[in-house]
Length: 124
View 1 (cartoon, helix red, strand yellow):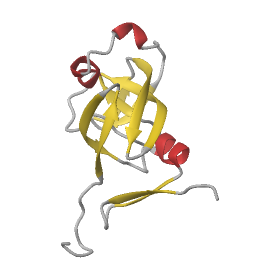
View 2 (tube, helix red, strand yellow):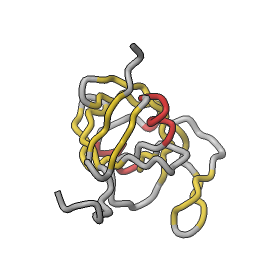
View 3 (cartoon, helix red, strand yellow):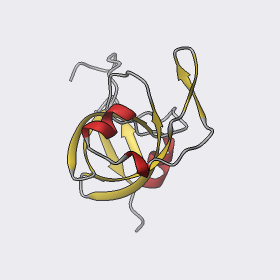
View 4 (cartoon, one colour):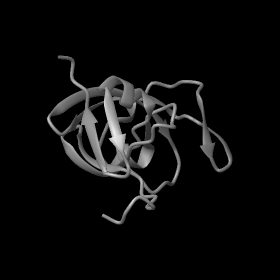
């Protein structure tokens, strides 16, 4: 542990569409789950699964980026399976998927960058 002064993002490895995907950050500040079109191409996901939309995602290149569309992907994170909607963007970025607030709320996840872990809050 480097102490409390580190600023590393929390990255997960997930199973997505029957493939292992690395470099998946959890960003509690993002209003959307993001999937670059390059990730879909690597996963060999058919472009016909992308539903066209008129959404602009802010925060790329100091401005907005029009979404190619949205897609629903099956994810497995640890022992938990999710079906999540992602905004598909044609951008060059350093991660393969981004899990934002929609995933955090659906998963009832509590993430800690300090401890580099995610905990799922289960109903008891």
